[in-house]
Amino acid sequence: MLDLRLEERCGIRRGIRRKMSFRSLIQEMRDEFGSISRHSLRSRSHRGGGHAPRVAAVGPAEAAAMQQSCWAQLPPELLREVLVRIEESEAWWPSRRDVVACAGVCRSWREITKEIVRVPEASGKLTFPISLKQPGPRDGTLKCFIRRNRTTQTYYLYIGLTEALADDGKFLLAARKCRKPTCTDYLISLDRSDMSKGSNTYIGKLRSNFLGTKFTVYDAHPPYDGAVVSKSRSARVVGLNQVSPRVPAGNYPVSHISYELNVLGARGPRRMNCIMDSIPASAVQDGGKAPTQTEFPLSGLDSFPSISFFRSKSARIDSATSQLSTQKEEKLVLKNKSPRWHEQLQCWCLNFRGRVTVASVKNFQLVASDENGPTNQEQDKVILQFGKIAKDLFTMDYRYPISAFQSFAICLSSFDTKIACE
Image (cartoon, rainbow, N blue to C red):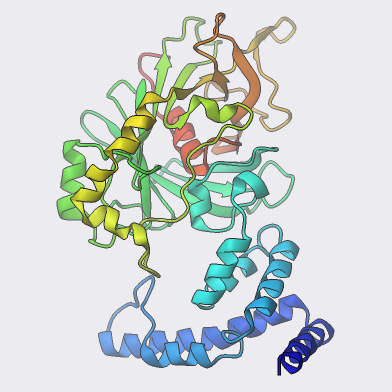
């Protein structure tokens, strides 16, 4: 019986290789599960009489249809082989969306896909939304760009699809500027059309002081085990009134950014100092590690084990020991790389390696600073680079140990008006 089963599986493998390309396999899978999803949405819209939810629960009939599908019942060994080859062949966007489609077929497909897809630190790829909260690649950088809309005071982060400075891009994050009497907030979301705190796509914010010289980056989710939520008044108001019960109402400070007085005058660059509260200084050393989020604590698709972290006060108290140990570690400090004076151009210059084409006071490169060293010497490896290439277009390149979310928030601070620095 075992031999027959192995022979049957080998026959299936050979049949797939001979008759179907992986693109046609994915297309067939999409058609089948897409028809189930469309039927589900129509039935819910008739019952509810309104718009379908962004992520809807699957009914018993649809779930049964998925379980009976040939794709959901593939042998695990064959399924893993298919998914591995799809992941290897669809290396970059827009074809990378086929990997995401595989994770949306059913639970078994999703679990295997999550095991196969490596984090950006190792793969240099952004696949799932949680990748935006994970540190960038150790070898090389992820090249992104930001589009600014002055009219709506919104900012959109894309990852480039080609070697060009900017192209159509793959949308990653959006931010909206909200002015207040004493500060300014930049609300960051996974949805370009909904950047409100009440949205289930809200992932954090950047807040500035009145002068625009000091900023704090808040993560809506705990960046590491034992992280303590901010006790600010705004956090309490959001938690009580504005955010859906399915969305974690948390302000976890992950970075503090400060700008110093520009002593070099209008020609000199701004002086930045970024304290990464959630990243130890050892992360930039050989063998160092930065905290890596593996999933969003609450999701519209599944209930993860970490959901109890937000529902139980005891969970936050029990993790106090972990938080104390984290606070004892020295925090990573990033400073803008010192420019050199160009005699012929009569200006301060940095080598952006062709990624920046327009001179601007907003342009910067951040490197790790060894504050405990005898000479306070900065490192040469650029961790975050930001610069202007057109009127409302900017490049953003980042690498380990910071994430796309943290990089985007730091770059947003450069857009804010700085009364005391200019």
